[in-house]
Amino acid sequence: STGGTFTTRTLYSDTNETALHLGQPCILNGIETLATRPDLLDRCWSLELNALSPGERQTEAAFWAAFDAAAPQLLGVLLDGLVWAVRHCETVAIEPRQRLVDVERWVCAGVGAFGWDPVTLQQALQVHQLASHARALEECASLWAGLRDLKKPWSGSVPDLMLATGQLGSSQRFGNTLRRYQANFRAFGISVRKWRQGHQGNRGYTVTVVSPVSLVGDQED
Image 1: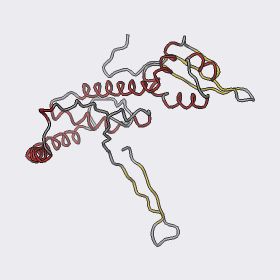
Image 2: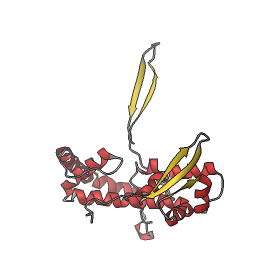
Image 3: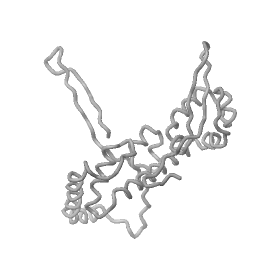
Image 4: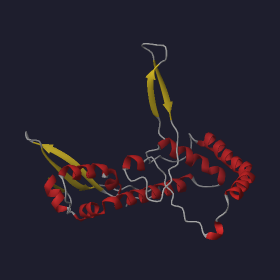
């Protein structure tokens, strides 16, 4: 969704190279939470939809008939938003906060066509992103609880941190988990940083309190 490049040798050439630049947003659908790793989570806007009641279900033929009837109006609404976004993208009064900087600015610039406030939408997107971080931390609930209970600042070896947070297993797996959820921890105000010292390469971690993600419009005391 954020773009990538595939390169290959140009046909009928020994030295030339062809580069294909690709960028294609996609929709992932599933029952469980699909995006839990921070690298994917930062590139996603997730929706949790309610199940349809029996009275809301309809045949495929009926659905597509209703969609085809509404399609011209739906296209018109999308084009209204597109025109507004093109007109206001460079002047919309927001400071992008998310990883998808251009997408955030583009979407917030377009909502004015529907009478919505860009800052209100940006704040809603941030609340949504924090909820996604919280869902991700459910995957390591025991470790997250242990880190929250630590008296901070805290610094010590890998075994010491495993013992302090009540974690079992190998130190390698423990370290991989810490790295995997580092961005999720930081979103809620806890920083876990790795250190290495001495000729023997002794390893450990420092756990500190940092400023959590602040919402747009929040006032500092």
